[in-house]
Image (cartoon, rainbow, N blue to C red; front, side, top):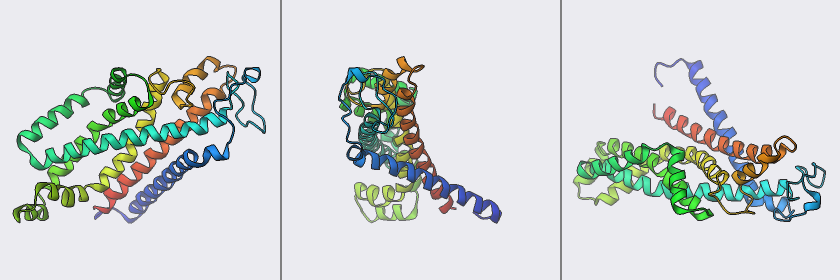
Length: 281
């Protein structure tokens, strides 16, 4: 960071640390809720009690009950498992295929690069959520299909970034030396290119996680997610909007959970990206 005044460097470092800490705390809270929350909130998220519908918050049920008399806090907490499962599964699939395709395209160049790059350009021509919506509509509703749709939705960004990093790193002396000594292309790609591109790609994974959660909830809001009575945040938003004026907590609770979860992954990914950029200067 030569030429940057010391106070500005300290301010940037403080901002980066703040984003990392805030994102890490929110992400850790989400993961803790997904793993341990159902044990801390033992109420049945599926138990219908129509005689207690829309019951206001109480000590026994801090968020009250929904329109079917189900414990709202239990449903929000259990919804964290659906959110994490779809986001982690979809982003992992999109990252695996996208990074491998993009890295091969950037390293090989030539016709393979042109074909893969044009295919990725076609996918990126669709707005992100529209691509996920199209995939989910073709696959049909269901948890696995939404996860696959999120993977398809995530793939173009990973392919584009991996292709750019690979094309840049293949010009490095250590990569060309390894290839000149007869190392197989797969080994060069894994040991030298992907290893050195890991930092930006990990940051991208975190950034995409928040967007994947929002996309999955959007699909569930439209009826393309897990079927009822699954406590999925997007489906809870859709069912709660009919009672927005008389029981706004039915919308605010899952909406806040989704917002804070997506914000945590965004801050974590942004902090990782900034720290990687600062360390490379």
